[in-house]
Length: 165
Image (cartoon, rainbow, N blue to C red; front, side):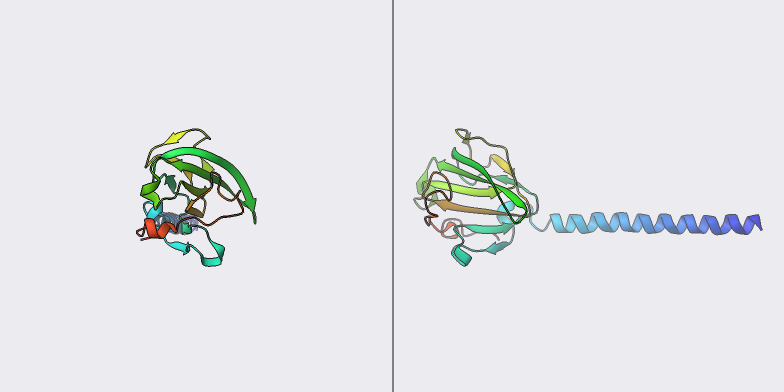
């Protein structure tokens, strides 16, 4: 009787290990497949375009990626805002070369966490911070995105048509 009990127990433990092993590797595979859908934030899918629902930039579905500056400049504004339970950092920087941005003097991004401070100079490609589930990025005529009555800037997709591809 003890041999039967030990045999059943071994099969049960083996079965549980196989199930745990399968769940573990399936979860990793699903996570990697999702995370690899866009390897760089600027190539993630667009969820809202410039002008859609009064959008001043574009929203990209980024899922926690590092966010880098598309163009160089000096940080002029960094402020946290929260709505619907999600907080973001609004970051604006004065561009070194506005001609590279369709004449727009400033660029902005809304991200989850920030690694930059007001007065800091950032090079193109420098880490600004990390996204939450999405980011908004755009061009603006204002030193701080959203403080001047939400004036419309240059359509970022006209300057960077490859965003979201």
